[in-house]
Structure formats: structure tokens, C-alpha cells
Length: 153
Image 1 (cartoon, rainbow, N blue to C red):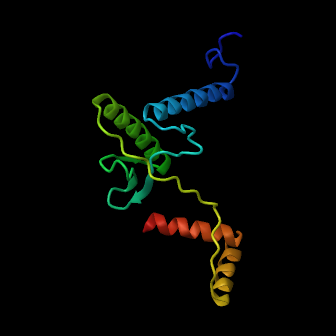
Image 2 (cartoon, rainbow, N blue to C red; image 1 turned 45 degrees about the vertical axis):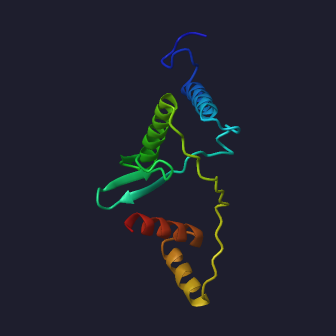
Image 3 (cartoon, rainbow, N blue to C red; image 1 turned 135 degrees about the vertical axis):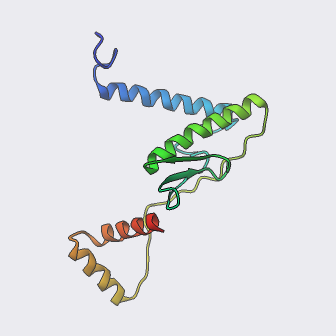
């Protein structure tokens, strides 16, 4: 293999795959250092992160309920979450080095992504009409409307 603009990788996709492997290994090691028996992040998401739009600061804020002193801000929710994840790892490393206790992550909550709502027939008709006017499915219209309400609220 010869060196390319992506180093020793054949393509950006291969480089991204290597970066994901390194990230998984780093997270595994962090979990092991934290004393967790199950360090698979897909089964144990670790510390909770709540990201919301801050009307006061006009940016997204991400907070960790287990480490309330940590707050990260960003132009997007994903940016704020990414920054907070780095801060959490730094804080855990600092606590480990100092011999301080590390809070237990909140229990993993799993959600199916489905929500069944019962509503009056007239309201169902009105909502379906709004979705038709915007030429989207009722499901898409409801999701978009709820997300918009969360952002402005």
C-alpha cells in the first residue's frame, strides 16, 4: 500500500473506519478504567446527556445529570453533545487520577421510537389536513411540529 492523501489508507472511508475503531477502543478502555463490568457502549450508554436549545444564550446547551457542573454549548445539538462527551471523559480521568469517586451512570433507558397517541377524531382530521397541505405524511408532520415546539419552548 502506498501513501495517499489519506495517509496509508486507500480511501476516506477506510480512514473513517479506522478512526471509529480507535474511538471504540478508547471508550472501551475508559469504561474499563471506570470499573464497569460491561464496557460495550451499545448496551451501556454511560452517562446521560440532555441537549436543548437555550433561548437565553441562542445556542444549544448539553448537560450531564450525573455531573451537573459540566455544561457544553454549540451551534448544533451534536456539537454541544460532542464537546460534553469530551468534557465527561476529561472529568472522569481527572477523578480517577485524584482518587475521587465517579458517579454511577443513570440506568440505560431504551425507547422504541414509537409512540401511540389516542386523540379525538376531529383533531385527527385537522392534523391530517395540515399534513396534506404541506405534502408530507402525518407522521412526518407530527415529528416536525413536536421538534419545532421543543426548540422554541
